Length: 502
Length: 111
Image (tube, rainbow over all chains, first blue to last red):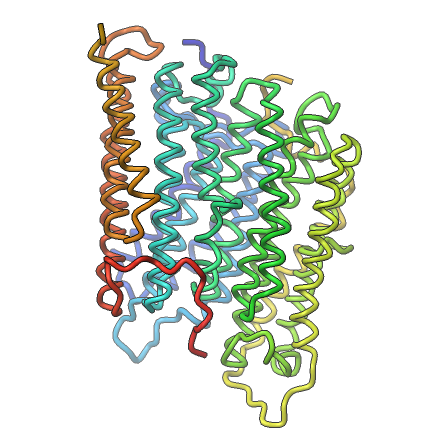
C-alpha cells in the first residue's frame, strides 16, 4: 500500500484540542451539575473560537496544512487530522456562528435560578457542544470511516435539537429527519465498504494515489454522494428539512440551517475533488447541477408560498444549498490549472460561508421577531419594525446575501458562480442563478414589506427583547455583508494544503 | 460453482434490497426503523466480505473491516435507540407508531 506519509506539524496539537474541548465541556456539564450547563458553555464557546482562529492563523502563516497524526500511527492503520485552508475557514465560520447563537440563546435557554434544573437548557447546551465537536471532526478527519462516525455524531446531536419542545409536530419532524439521515449514512457506509474492498485503505490521501477509474470506484462514490445528498437536503431528498428546521427553536434552527447541512456538502467536495479519479465524470457533475437548479427554482417558489416566516426561511435554505451544487460542472469545465484556482470553486465555497452567516442571522432575527410579536405569520408582521428595529435590519442585511445584491458575501459568491457559468457557456446554470436571485428578492421583500408596515391600533409587544440579543444577530448579518468586500478572484488561502492531481 | 464469498455477497445484496424496500415504501415509522436495521445488517455483511476477501492488503481475513463493523453496529444501535426514544415520546404526545408521518410541513403551529 502506498500512502502519503503524514507528519505532525508544529501546531498540530491544536486540532486535537479543537475536537476535544467541546467534549470536555459536555463531560463537565454532566460532572459538575446540570444547572451549570450554560456557564460551562460560555467558557467553552470563546475558547473554541480562539482555537479556530489560531489554527487559521497557523495555516495562513505557514502556507501549508496543519497536520496531526494520532498516536504517531501512520495511515492506513492510524488516523491523521489535517486542517487545510478550506477546513480552517469552515472551522472559523462554525465557531463564529456558534458563539452568536450562544449569546442569542442565553435569552431562551437560561437555567432559572429559582427553579429546579430544567431539562431543555441542559439538553440544548450539551447538544450544541456535541455538535461542535462532530463538525470539527468532519472538517479535520482524513479517514472515510472516521468521517462516517463524525457524521453520525452530528446527526445524533442535531436530531434532538429539532424536538426540544416535545410537541407532536416537532417529534414527527425529528423522526423524519433521523430516517432520512440514516438512509444517507447507510448509503455512505456501503460506499466505504466497497472502497475498502477495492483498495484496502480509507485514508483520503492514500486513496487519491490509488483510485482507479473503474466501475467499483464509480459505484462506491455514487453511493456515498447520494447518501450525503440526503443529509445535505438536495432536491428531491429535501423533504425532511423544512418541517425540521422550521419546527426547531430559533437558536437550533440557525445552527441546523447554517452549519449542519454544510458538513455533508463539505464531504462531497472532499470526495469529488480530493479523492475521485480526476477529471471527474462530466455527466455526474451535470446531474448534480441539474438537481441544484431544480432545488433553487422549486424551493424558492415554495418559500414564496409559505405563510410562516420560519418555514419560508427553511425552504430558502434548500434553495441556497442548490447553488452549492452548481459548482461541479463549472469547476470541471474551467481552464484553471487546478480546481481550487478556478472562479467556480471560490464562488461555491464563498456561497457556503456567506449562506451560513446570513441564514444563521436570518433565523435568529426571525426568532426575535416571533418572540416580540408572539407569532410568525408573515401576513401579520406589521409593526415588527417598531418592536424590534435592529432585528428587522439584520433580517434585511442577511436577505441581501440570499438575493445576491451588493454589498454582501452572497453577491460576490453568486457573481463568481455567474462568471464561471458564462465563461464555460453553461447558460442554463447562469439563468438559474439569475432567476433564483429574483425569487429570493421576492420572498425577502415580501417579509420586509409587511414588517415595515405601520402597526395595527391594537398592537402589543409581547416580550421586550434585550438589546444585546438584537446586536448579536446584527453582528452576524454584518459579517455576511463584510464578506462582500473580498476581492473578486480565487483566494490563495482556500487552496492551501490542497495537494493532488491537477 | 459459486464460492462462499459470492453467496454471502448475494445475501448482503438481498438484505440491503429488503431493507431499502421497507424503508422507502412502508409508511409507518416503526416499520421503517426495523427496515433500517435490516439495511444496516446487509451493509455490515458487505464489510465481512471485504474482510474475507482480504481487500487490497492481500491476506485472508483482514481484521480491519471487522473492527469497523463493530463500530458500525454500535452506531446503528445508538441510531435505533434514538429512533425508539423519539417514537416513545411521539406516543406520549398523542401520536402513534403505526401512523404515517405527515408528508407536508404543518402550518398550524399555535402562536
